[in-house]
Length: 260
Image (cartoon, rainbow, N blue to C red; front, side, top):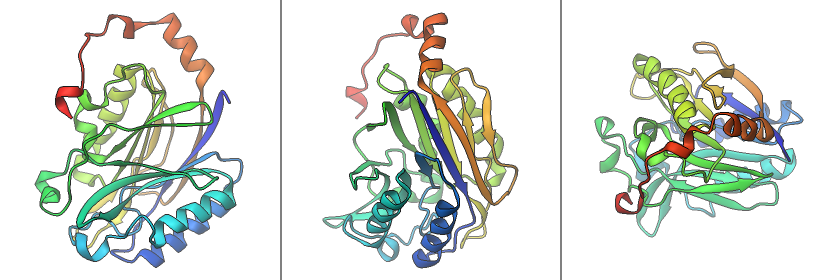
């Protein structure tokens, strides 16, 4: 498939209330047809909570089962992060679930120090790329956006996905870096953020968007808008652009091995 339609769901999150959040996202997913990939915000079932032991689930828990059910019903992949407990350790885990029930995941590597995330979650150790419908997706979470080396395209992906709880005071940073990551990596960038107030009194502006390989915004949701935005990613167009402007051929060679 050379074209895939992506839907970003930008929503308020009910603080530490998984049932209410899943019900909300289920309603949104059911309203949109002809979508091959739904992207939800970071910790979409709880909000960005440091009460990790309270909100964490297992890979056999309710939220993962819900994602599998929704993916099958919508015949579309679903992507979003959840607090996941594994053998006593808790990760901010970005899950990518396909219609056939396959669950792939990336554990957030860069934990948000200013919010104390590193005190409550374990950092991931692997850079993860998943393939779906002919596209290669590099999975990233929120604060990862500030670290371009980790996201560096080694010609192993076509799309960068960022899910986030990125506060309003730093919204310009979010918007700018999403476009920068697209231009420097010659890849599509999908950034899905939440809106509204969280349990700590922080406000989120959303600014969810899809950016193409040249840095142009293809689709976006307005400031604090509750809703869904869709965009088509065209693999053929991306490949043609890279043939016409092959800046990646002059990139400095290096390895991420020493960083992981």
